[in-house]
Every structure is written in structure tokens, then in C-alpha cells.
Image (cartoon, rainbow, N blue to C red; front, side, top):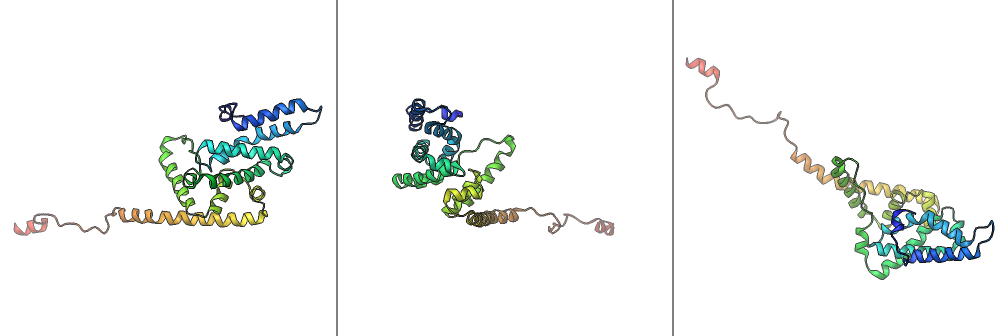
Length: 234
């Protein structure tokens, strides 16, 4: 289940929910037919890491993310047939998590902190020499992303970080996949334009600081008489 999940205490709401459902499944197990508890447990184990990562990128603290995850799986248990019938169950869970996130933000008033935690801290690059360049590139993308609309930001994050296809995003949003493709194309163009706008000032500064190649430099005349003058004086 992954090391992050193993750190949760038994009193954590998600662990309590899963433990209760697993115990219920042990009592009601039917030979040859997976029980609802077993199906839910399989769903939880196969999607938990993705749902937690989704919540962590969109909340101010890990505790807030855990609350969203717990509420998401409680909804999934209550609507188990719906989630299991979905084309992409994890996309269905993302949609539910998005609703709980919206409720949480309305109640907590932590919009500013939410914006500062759009992405998790990336792992260090293999080559330390590349770290400054990678960090600057990532920071540039994040700054440009922050200038886009909330809808564009969410769409680009679903593609880049949740690695969802347009078809899967369409299921999350409940819209036609063709519409998602159009919106994604436009969002990428707007992000590229924002990156180019942010790059222009630094490019101009570099051009101003560019050293002369020496062809147009004005040279001071040498001190003292020239060799021709010395010959004439003799």
C-alpha cells in the first residue's frame, strides 16, 4: 500500500472506514462472489495513492488532504455501484474529491494557502549541476500558470500531474471529451503565451548586458609618437 499509507495511525478516519468495511466483509463473505466490502477494499487499495496525491496538491496541509480523502472514500462506499461502474474509477473519485475540496475551501477560507500548495516539492534531480536550471524552469512554469484562469490551471494540472487523458478528464467534469480537447488546446496556448511574456524582460536585460565583440569599439590612440614620426624626426 506504500510507505505513506503505512504511517497512518489506526484511528485515522480512512483507516477506520476501511477497517470497519473489511470486518463487515469477513462476516458476510459469500463463496465465489466478492462482497461489497471486498470490492471497496480493492478499490481503495488501487486508488488511494492517486487520490491522496490529488488532495495534497490542492490543500494547505496534509491534515486537510486526509480529511478530503476520507470524505471521498466515504462517498465511494455509499455509492459503490456508481464508482465501480465508471469507465475510470479514479476519475470518478477525483470528481468527488473536487466537490469535497470546494466545500472545505468555502469553510476554511484558506484560498491563499491553497494557491501556494498547488504542487508537491519535487525530488532532487539526479545531477546536482542541473538543479538550478530545473528549479528556475519549474518556477517559471508555476508563475506563468498562476496567471491563467482557475479552469485552465485545473485542466493543465489534471493532464500534467494526474496524467489523465482528455477522455478521462471528460468523465471527471461530466462534459464531452471533444470539448475537453478544445479547452486543453486553448489552455496550452495561453500558458505558452504567458511563458513568452515572462521571458521577454529577462531577454531584453541579457541583450543590454551583452559584451561588445570588439568590432565597433573606439580605440584610444597610443601614447607618444608613432614609428613614422620617429623616423622623420631623425
